[in-house]
Amino acid sequence: MTDKEKRSLYMSKYYDNKSEIDLRISNGIEKYRKGEKTLFFKDSEGNPLAGKKVKITQKNHDFKYGANIFMLDEFGKSEDNAEYRRFFKEYFNFATLPFYWNTLEPNEGKMRFEKNSEKIYRRPAPELCMEYCRENGITPKLHCLYYDKFTPDWCAADDEKTLLLKLEKRFSEIAERYCGKMFEFEVTNELFVVKERKTVLARKRGIINICFELARKYFPNEKLTINEANPIPDIARLDYYSPYFLQCENLLNQGVPIDRIGLQNHLFVGASSRTPESYEAQMRERYYWNDPFMYYRALDVMAELGKPLEITEATVPTFGTSEADEELQADMLRLWVSIWFSHPAVDAFVYWNTIDDYAYSSPGWDENKCRGGLFHHDLTPKKSALELKNLFSKEWYTECELVTDAMGEVSFRGFFGDYTAECCGKKIEFGIHNDN
Image (cartoon, rainbow, N blue to C red):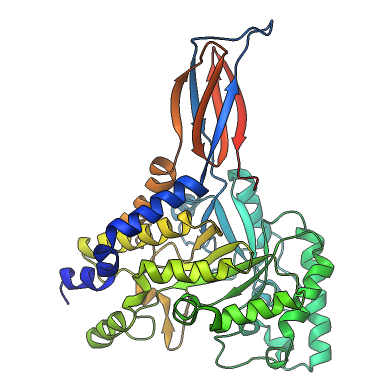
């Protein structure tokens, strides 16, 4: 397949409707991601400071844009660890921390919370991650409290009653340390897509209800999130009769305390096979993944449940190793992120694996084959990383110089976030936030 054919396959829906899509994106961003602000400047005696220059600078975004932080201090070379620490805070303001049960508690009763805990690949200890986040202004989130696939082997064969007691103990121990310290707690993950159930709990009717009830018991004031793998195409095609919409609607109608709805968005083309024939076949089969109308329809449907939406995991593949392949990945990422940023119900997204060749791999399934990183294996940025940085540090960023009027006032419209204003040698801090 030529570069032109690849681009046509994945961008044609956008190109054919570019004016309409661009208008929805720009209107949505202007309406839902920005707000008005008026500042008043006066001297020490309370008189207006008229005709004075004011420099406005945005410090951060309210919108969360992040990645998993699974490779923190995981490299063999100290210089690579230092570079990862440097670029993560430069490119992201949000981080998914690994709390998989089998690696947080590999041996029963011995939790790997502390930063100096035994190392497990792609599973840095929570306290190491939390320390990095605190020091660098990164908002952390927990992934996840119950994920059947990663139940420890030492309890996988337990009967239902015993396993529930151990699960509750896990919830309570995590809550004791991390209540009030996370943006959100993902409670359940990928209960639809599991082909083989590891434990009796995954086969139990009402397990999601039980997990959320336990979570609310131990995390009474936290944001609790449900998460599922790649439901967007089904939602777009089936609307209100899609499995995930019906599941979430049913749970909410039962009073299950779901605060946020997570939607994974992986385009794992090539993960199971990357022969030229199968690779191209998967690309053609999954062309719909880059259909903007599909994205907006799915988000509109899920938004009717009245809960914030989060793209909890995202992967955009690189369909080869050429410069044109990297440009296509960057253009696809820009389109996806622009749609998410322009939709009023979405308030966060997490890019999953940031660096090529350091993704999840298992027999018959290797996410590294997708070349889905934003950075090359040597940690240099791809065009997609640079595009993401450009969006949030330049294009969707407010910085301006104004002059106070006769009343000492300046007014402007800026992206939601925290700001500084400098006038006459003094600096003030303020915010523009969506309080609706």
